[in-house]
Image (cartoon, rainbow, N blue to C red; front, side, top):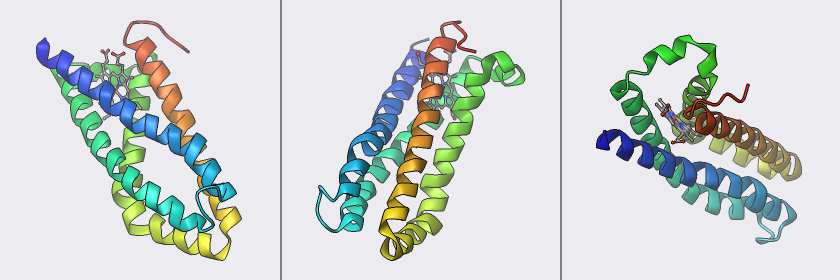
Length: 158
Ligand code: HEM
């Protein structure tokens, strides 16, 4: 079972880097950018940080997906997806799909240009919306992590 332990360790490590980054952007970077503490050009400051973090998040998402499906297959846990008791397995996959779509499809193709245009036209409203979206994703991520850590040890939060 060394391979499963290795997959689990990589899974958790990537989750820590990825969701830790989301928490940092939500609770530290965005409030500072919105107040202009990182410089008067808020859009430039935000894009410089988000562009670099975007790559951390993309690499981490791939590792989380590969190790997650590897564990599911190796331990033959597919049956869990037919039971509501394992809601946290559904939550992990849904959250992963959501971030994968945002990071690999929506952001490069649409969101980046859309946000840039909105932030030029109406910066306060654009950054408020962006901050709210980050809080939403962070809240979903924290519930998923709590559900997965307790659920994989047989404890149910719901
Ligand atoms: C493709 C998506 C994913 C799949 C297939 C997947 C699958 C798994 C599996 C099979 C386990 C082991 C469960 C057990 O031992 O009973 C696990 C554990 C875990 N996963 Fe995921 N996962 C995915 C995405 C995520 C995401 C997006 C997060 C967090 C944001 C996450 C966080 C965790 C955590 C915290 C654990 C518990 C580790 C521990 O306490 O040892 N996973 N995952």
